[in-house]
Length: 280
Image (cartoon, rainbow, N blue to C red; front, top):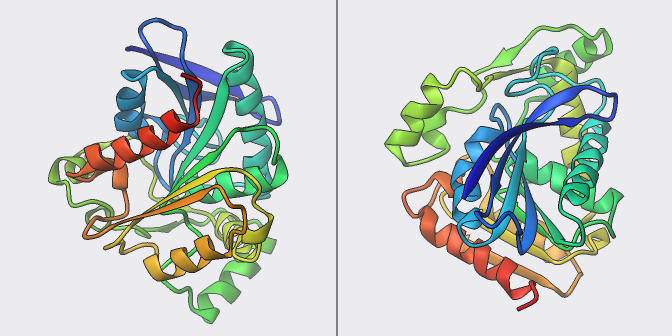
């Protein structure tokens, strides 16, 4: 397995960081783009990258706009659609690097929301999507008072940060990962009002769009998720009418499935689903 650090070009020409895990042969069986969650960065997808690259699948994990190595305003976008257009560039660049390969998207938490909207916007570009506890069914409700203030600040484009939104201990039961997250200088635990309002609008719209998803889908959900409601996730999954879909619930596991002590089981299920779709 070969690890590389690279970049991709965003929709507006901004160069952003991307981690890559490539099979030793440098001739992958398929490609997977792994999209991180809120406050995270591409490097946090390492367990997925290493596991799949050792099995012949190249993994690309970009820092999404506003996070990781990003040099502009952290935790901020003007429009949620910026993420979807950035992802279109990522997919095109990855497909250009390794031509004629099956291409899949994997989204963890907020990354899952990005993947859903990409699949809705560009339904015929990729060969399937994997959602890991996607942020379409958050457990924490936002009070109307906070939301009203956030909307006002968003309209004024105030760059005030809201922080402490995800206790790392609620994301994983793995104490080593908790400690790593706390010491990681690339993690950014804050968002602007504009970011928050744009993402909430995208969540609310996505909840109604299940029937419009027209790609194969693997939905992996943590049973003891403190950040996303497993019950609401199942309701969203059930609203997807596309026949090629699979639901796996992991009882007792927390939100960051790929970082849990039982991650080998989660990643094996992921690989099996991908392997089933690849030519022999």
